[in-house]
Length: 276
Image 1: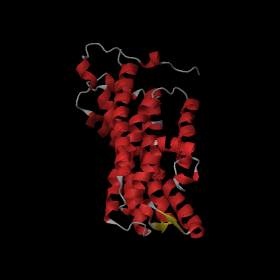
Image 2 (image 1 turned 30 degrees about the vertical axis):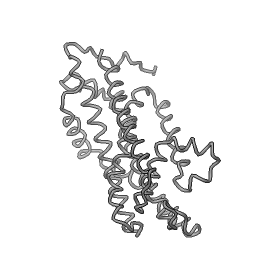
Image 3 (image 1 turned 90 degrees about the horizontal axis):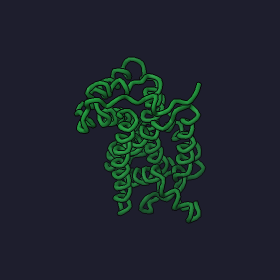
Image 4 (image 1 turned 30 degrees about the horizontal axis):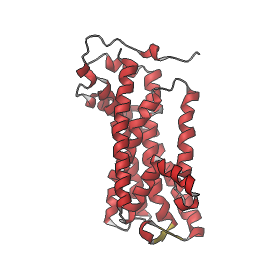
């Protein structure tokens, strides 16, 4: 089967004015998403939650018994499980957002022709982008809520500041989801979609998830500090023990910029792809 081009998905803008970029009806996309989850997608939704939990059990309890205590944010000694748990929470939020904004969007765009159908109605590209990103955030919220509960059961939460882990996780998910949909719009085949895994897996392994950034040479540290997941990991670690610094603001600013740029990127990409 030959690769599809952008022309295969284009529809004529017709009488849609520029103002039709957003019709104020993203809730229609969200409502459809919940109907799909309710009817057939709940197993896939739940399955993604367990991967970071298994990592926490194997690495935190298994390897953690050999590692002992490590130095956490602010210099306080903490258990290895408490060290990697917030990092895995960031990974969980990223995974949930990436799945919903990449593979899910890929099938809707190239096989279901869902977005072309939506744009034949009064919906605009921004409505679709906001609706799909919201669904990705919903998945990230569920994973964050469940994983924070697991941390609580394991005794890894020791400060009320840890309650901020859930909204922080949603912010991390928002950052990744805002870019995922736009990037996926460039993918036409399953082989091209593998590029997403090719990027995500090294970022997961090298973003100081299981060990401190200081183990790397300085030039490598600069590269790692450019990763969005590293900012999410550090933000979660600081929140988990209530050790805040000026770096906390940098991490939050990183994601705020990422979200704004990502939403604009996704909206512009949908408009150029579907509305001519």
